[in-house]
Image 1 (cartoon, one colour):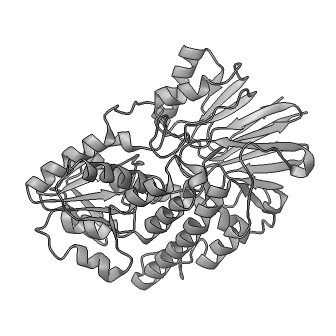
Image 2 (tube, rainbow, N blue to C red):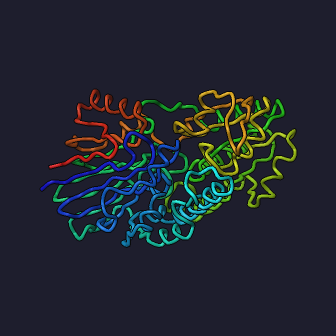
Image 3 (cartoon, rainbow, N blue to C red):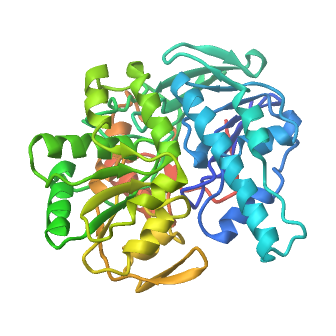
Length: 456
């Protein structure tokens, strides 16, 4: 019998992950991600899926980041009525991230209508906060390392830890005695907070991410690098602004800032966490000790290093004294929205200040423009001059680099029949394909967007 896999997202790009597995008339969707970044990608969110939504038997999520889970409210809005299988940590995070995404969709539509810059009249949100809350109620957590029967009994599902963020998993589907493994986003080995990624013992086919498939992370201690940036910025009387992903990156930053404070390696200056969502996620880390390395005491000490600013007024108050050195951690990580835009508009024009880019910056985002040395960036309706120092710190990334991806693949007990390389920009995916071919001698390919491969 023929098993098929269709790459409905996450192919040729790092966003919108959706992989449709078909067997004996049954369909399982692995990940249900939102396309993010440049407008041509975002517009893909409005295109209907190439199959009837009601024909999908099960949905499985690898983790909660919106590029893997954020299309779920739209799917349910279109008629998907079954449960969504994932780990407990993913379910807990989605309960925070999805409603926030719906709220932002509504805000964007309202702004487009108010300022009349949409070609649609009226502009409508892809989904609402209420839609997202309904989607979150569909999440059905399952334990790691426990086999579940899905697709009417024609497939077996097993989750293993991927180490990327809270609840992140790689997905094993056993189908007619064959095993198809999805890596999800693979985390770092030796991370101080998250556990190491697990490799399944064997697989017949593997779908692997390639976000950093063409590069290696520095082995510098992130705390040392961050401390050096803070010291030199404070010495010139400046402010350090860190656009940060609310899930994973923020918690790692707080951990390293606590280490620096305890060693007295940075001046005694205020540290702010200015992101209500990041604060909610940080609180979740405190109560999810089963899913990471930190103890309750270590969580409390690390995460108390920053002052949490909940209200808009508290956020505005941070900027009132521009002559006082401070550290501001705020979402979003690629500077595509959120409170960090107000801080960037305020601090980018001043040479005393520093912006720290603490992770991957997808092409077409403001973060990528800053990383590429843009002289000005547009935000909140105006162009802002970039005079502040811009520092990239890829060693803070929660994504495995090329060596770590190869280490994960090296954990399989036998070569798979084929490896599909996804979730990467074209150069990164091609580089990883060439390395797998050269170093392992395995059959592999980079699938085209919306293509289907038949596995016999």
